[in-house]
Length: 201
Image 1: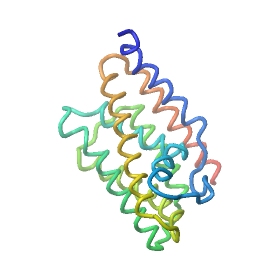
Image 2 (image 1 turned 135 degrees about the vertical axis):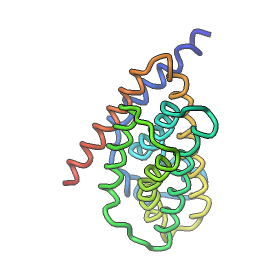
Image 3 (image 1 turned 90 degrees about the vertical axis):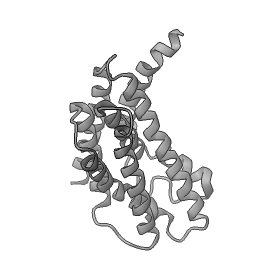
Image 4 (image 1 turned 45 degrees about the vertical axis):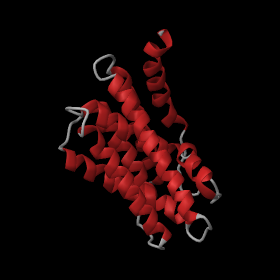
């Protein structure tokens, strides 16, 4: 029982630390995509994507007025547009400024978690969805020309949904119990985004 009470706190601390170890994603795995399992693991090893996806879930949980359907708008918007961006990348569409936009998404999402700023549901979905296109485009460009792309994309999408869910669970459990931990996680994500942007300048 004691573990169940402390698990959300431990998870939030880990979430705050993860972005500090992250690296720019595009090409991070040297294009080694093969099937569902590899696609599933890919967002977990591209820690900039991992941080962004968990941050979406955290932000949704921390700012939702009610559990249903407010919790789902931003995560569904992100997942849908991630898929759209990935399909565009697979089709050969070259999105401009993919790396800067991924870095910018970390900065913005981190600030949203830090400030716990509430937006209308459709605006939240549109905001994160716009960033998700670039996250998906990075995946799609890496997958272009590889066999088993559909299975790999399915794995990536499944991991994305689970990462959103992890953020939601942690954020919801800390809504009224301990709000400084998600704020610390948001600050870490925002700082990481700013550092990435600076490195790309």
